[in-house]
Length: 245
Length: 110
Image (cartoon, rainbow over all chains, first blue to last red):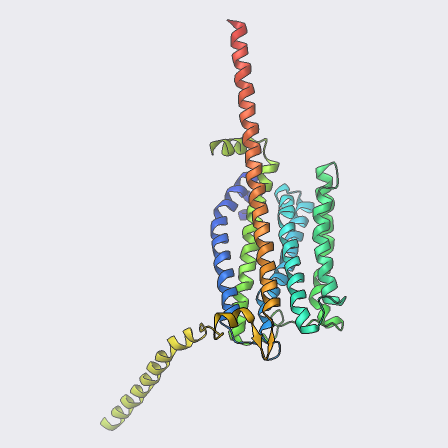
């Protein structure tokens, strides 16, 4: 696997690799997002307890799961950058962070809009909501630390360190609904038992989940290309590429 | 002997019949899940169940989601284009300086 991965550490190769993946990822992301959301909004029966407010699930759950998935991806990139000193991995950390922050904000905002009609309040300081808010601040922290040092290398290292240490928050978010008494309901699909949701509602949810994953990959590819260009702008291959167009 | 063969054929036919009837059902089963749930478009916008309208909350969350996603995409596109313009301008400037120096060099030597 490393034999296959190794050439991708070279910025120029990675730039072209991401460029090849990008149209496929973006196209399938937009297609699955529209399919999953339209299906979930108009073509599934209503929930017997929560009424039509449950339709928020098709963006709330995918964005929440992928906000954690994005964090894990960012932390793996940060770990790779710290241990093996691979600069492209370092750039990937900063490419992923804003996407993860947006996903976390979406999960929080849609959760609020769902909480108001179901719980009677926009916000409560319970375990699930608070730990998810900490995830948002971790993303902000990584982005802020990156630019907080006059020496770029130092900033990148400190930001990566925070990203790796912050992984501890992921199991806390996931198990918060079991460890503490919270208003938030328990896991529906991310558990070992059979999903406790009807198949007619599960399919659009899984498609939306795939859509958020593909969108994360597409945006990460695109932002990583920007980061590569920015950091390599003095190299001949970048100058040649840019002046060709 | 003939009787058993006939019986087998009959059994086979009835099984075939079952298969066909299932397959006749199949398109309906497949497309049955794609029937629009709401009676009208205004019902769809209203999202009301058992007398309570959830439309505001549902459309608020979908609106915010798409707003944030489009903003992130737009910001990323803007950053990428801006950077390319900057690099192109720098390359053009370097070339101009090079040309000027070569021209000056030629002017002084001749």
